[in-house]
Image (cartoon, rainbow, N blue to C red; front, top):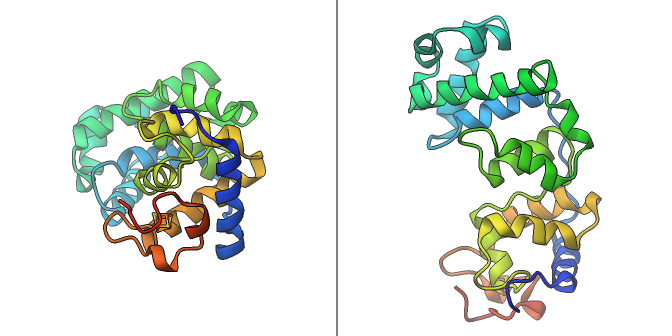
Length: 223
Ligand code: SF4
C-alpha cells in the first residue's frame, strides 16, 4: 500500500469491530461552543483539572461575550488550574472572536452543514486546534461524521493496514472517513479506542485474543 487507504480493509475492520463490541452510542452535546472551549482547556492536562477549569470559567463570566472581551489576565486567572493559563486564555478569546466574526454569533451551528473535511478546515484555523481536536468537536458536539485519529486509532490503522505505514495521523482522518458510510464514523472511532486500550495496546498487544486476528497482517508480530 502506498499511503492510500484500502477502503475494503477499513470496511472489513469496521464490521469485525462492530460484531465484537457492538454499536456504541453517544448523545451529542447541546453546547458545541462549550465543547470547543473545553477541548482547548484539556490540552496538556488531566480531564479532572480541565473540567474544574471549565467550570470555574463559566462561573466567573456570565456569557461568551464577557469572556471574549474580558482582560486576558482575568480569563487566565479563572482557568489557571488547567495550566498554560495565559496561552489557553488567548486561544479561547481568539476562538470566540472568530466565531462571532464569521457566524455573527457565538455558535458553531453553520458547521453542521459542512463535510468533515470542510468542518475540520474551518476549525483548524483556530489557534491551537489540530485535526484530532477539530474532529472531536465535529463528531461529538455537532454530529458531523468525522473520525478523530488519536494515538490508538492511528496505531491500529497502521497495524491492520487500513492505512499505509508512512501515513501520519493528520492525513489518516480523511482516508478513513472516505471508506465508510457517515453513520458508521462515530461507532468506528469509539470501537477503535476501546480496542486500542484493551487489546491492540501499544506494548504487548493481545493478538491471541483479538477479533481482528484473521484480517491483521501484524498478528503475532506487532508493534
Ligand atoms: S492481531 Fe494484534 S496487531 Fe493486529 S489488531 Fe489484533 S492485537 Fe492489534
